[in-house]
Length: 83
Image (cartoon, rainbow, N blue to C red; front, side):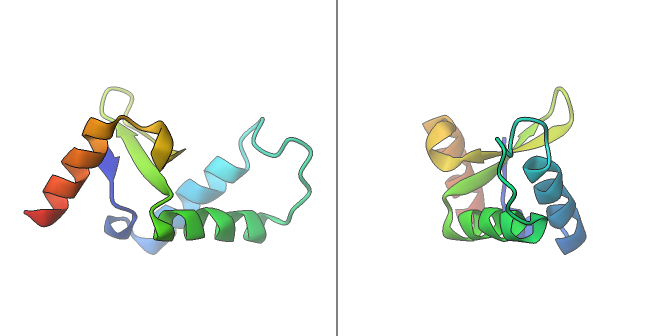
């Protein structure tokens, strides 16, 4: 299930992004400051290049590139936004 970023409170979205960019394996030796990495992810979300994926079974949110999620999920999101 995809969650529109604008439905999350600002603090919640920031915490989700910070968790994502500081996870093991996400920096690959990148020493870019945290704020810069957070801004990159925000821009990707704002541009629609990245999406928030919610897994109801685990009750966890993940960030993913739009190109990596099933087309049906994107269609369901568009349908829910147009309702």
